[in-house]
Image 1 (cartoon, one colour):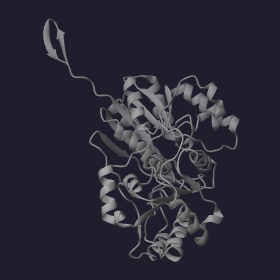
Image 2 (cartoon, rainbow, N blue to C red):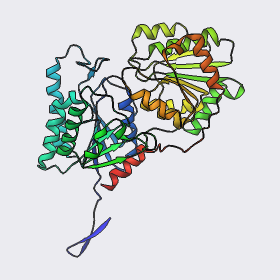
Image 3 (tube, rainbow, N blue to C red):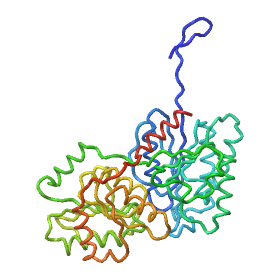
Image 4 (cartoon, rainbow, N blue to C red):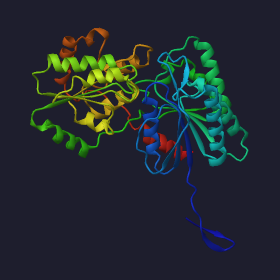
Length: 399
């Protein structure tokens, strides 16, 4: 871009917008991969992705830098923080993390601070978030917008009134906007946050966040597995793996004992956090049709090539299923309402069937799988907005 200074023509460089993204996953990996998808879409920005959970291997594009804070996670009941490195002292790690974040904001001076979930969740991390938010609020050399990035459904709270008051106070104290990664035709925020009318800052529905299958990779997978010669592929997955072992064991048993005569291939993914004993048990059932792996770098294209998906019902996997247009059996996590509510609603937009505890008996599960394999991939009704990552990037550009 050119401009005139004192009558002379000079080159003027457009400032590249700098986005600092904070993402803390505490049990599974869904929050991390959803946020990573958003970061990948921000191709025109300088993106710094700050992560704070157990390390997850992922390829980053050139415009994204990753800063990994000393790892903190939570127990399955979401009640207690612990260090990923058991030799580290919790309070010492908290102090280090807070100082790293403060130094990062002071040094990088971001234009936007995108905070995943807080203040709707992640209250256990206020020890580092509030000091940073207060620093940004002082505007001392930092001119930064603060935006909350959140999924579609919130987990239930023991004291909803107190929770609502705290969230709204935090939003009005530190935040400029809330981005809800949902299509309001399916799920609106007020379904799990009744106080939405009290929010006085911008609230934007971006659409759901998901990658889409790569047609070339889908064709390669089909050719590699012989799917064009009559074989059929089932993909089973459990997200991070902390709570999915019973489902994978049931799928493997159903394929090995009941569906053994069928021309079916199974690829099952344990996730990085499944207990090693459970992983080893599953690996013991491998044969020429059944393979157990930890992770695949292109899960969405694998789903695009699959004839059936069997999985837990987290946000990311459900959106992958819809984007891949693959028939699916999903087992919602029982601890809270989030996965059940999403799966029930999605069943009206995609070929999804919910699994209950009794469905995990191998003979029954085999019947459910055979029925799902015969379902058409198409589904009547309107298509959901699945462009949440790109829409988030465009909204950032409008700032």
